[in-house]
Length: 238
Image (cartoon, rainbow, N blue to C red; front, side, top):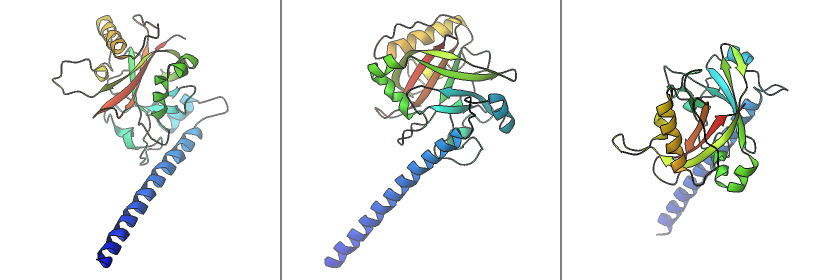
């Protein structure tokens, strides 16, 4: 029995050390990639035109004050989730790089849907969930999304419209699915989307988007339910 207990103990210890090693690697990798993103910036912030020469997949840069969200945004219409597990340099990365839904057309879609991982180390879009604290929202009512249009950098300031928890529902479910509104090009879809996200919001911000204002939706995983999601929507004000 002593031998059996010793074997069980050794196995448990190995599992513990293995799990600890994986978590340490996970956190260190996430932090390392954040540092890599910081190296893409200049003294004045970021130069999308210059970055486009390094990687033509870049379409914008998202920055949310009060959080660590300060990242390039990629888009690959022919392979929509290419950057799910790749960094800016197209190398393997557990944290990936924020990317825009393939259906969001630059300069046409009135909603840019941008995805980012919820990394427990606090990187990527993890800190979006800070907005569930009403006091935090009151102190951080705007964010910026700068985009590339016709080869030029166009800076944009967005006002937070709302934020909410949702989930990826079954295809035949008769519910509002915010992730199906990545390509809004008419007033009817715009108003349906605004009504839908407002209904999911935990409280009213008093910000009401009006057609044809540009919207940006930031989406990440959440763990309140299977396939849970957390999203924040902003409207362009400048």
